[in-house]
Length: 369
Image (spheres, rainbow, N blue to C red):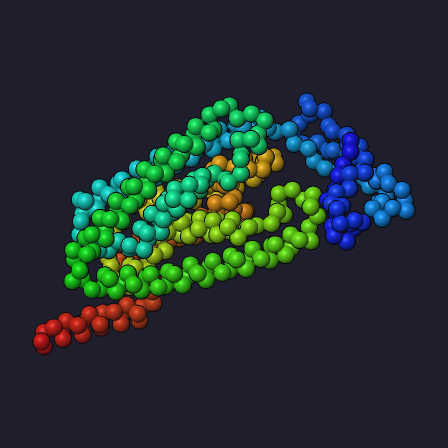
C-alpha cells in the first residue's frame, strides 16, 4: 500500500509541500481467527531516488494487532449497566441523608456547606456545560467500535437523567442545610468554622491544581520526544483534561471539608449518616478498583470506548488506583472517629486541652457579665 507522512518545516522543498506520499508499505497481518493479539510485520521504503532529499533507507516494521472488538462491546455494555447501578445507589444514599436530617434536624449546623457545595458542583458542572457525564469520554466513542448494538446512545440519555436526579437531591440537601444555618444565625461559631474551612480547602485545592498542571507540563515535554506512532500511553494531556481529572480527585476526597469543619467546630454530632458517607465514598472509589481489574484482565481497549472509570474523568493508573481508595477509606475512618469521640480526636492532646481552656474562659466571661 501507499503511505504518506507529514513533512516538518526543515524537510519541505517548496512552500506548498506538506505531505510525502511516495512511500511503499508492505504489511502482513495475523489471521482473523487468531487470538486477540498477534504480530504485524512489514517494511517501509521510499520510492524516491537516493539523491532526493526526502529519500530514506528501507525500514522494518512490527506492531501488535488487536481483534477484540466484540470483547470491548461486551465491556462497554457491562460498564453502562455499572454506571446506571452506581447512579441509582447514589440517589439512594443522598435520599437517606435527606431523611436523616429531617428526622434529626439538630445535626444540620454540624454539616459542612463546603462539602455539600463540592458534591453539588460535581453533578452540576457536567449538566451546565452540556457535556457527557463524568464517566463518559468526550470522543465519539460509539463510532470507535465496529458495532454498538444501537442502545449505548439511548443509555447516555438515561445516564444524564440519573445525573440530574442526583444533582436535584444534592441541591435540596444543600438548601436545607443553608436555610437552617441562616435561621440559627446567632451561632457564630458555625459560620466562623465554615469560613476557616473555605479558606483552607481553597488553598489546598489551588495548591493541588498547580501541582497537577506542573505534572501536565512535564508530561507534555516528555511527549514531544516520543515518536508519533506511540498510540495511547504517551498522548499529550490537555489542560482541560487535567482539570477534569483533578476535579474527579477533589470529588473522591469530598469528606475533606467535613473533617476540617469538625476540627474547627469541635463537633461531636453525628452530622452524616453512615449510609451517606460510607456509601458515597464506596461509589466514588469503586471505579478505581474496577480500573485495576480492567487493566490486568483486558487487552488493548479501543480509544474513546471507556464509559465507566473513564481516564479523562479522574486520575487512573495502577498507583492512583491504590492511593485513592486508601485515602478515601482513611477519610471515612476519620469521620467515624470524629462523630464518636469529637472533632478534635485526631489532633494532638495539647490542642484539645487548649480548646477546653477556651471554653472555660468563655463561660467565665459570661458569668462575670
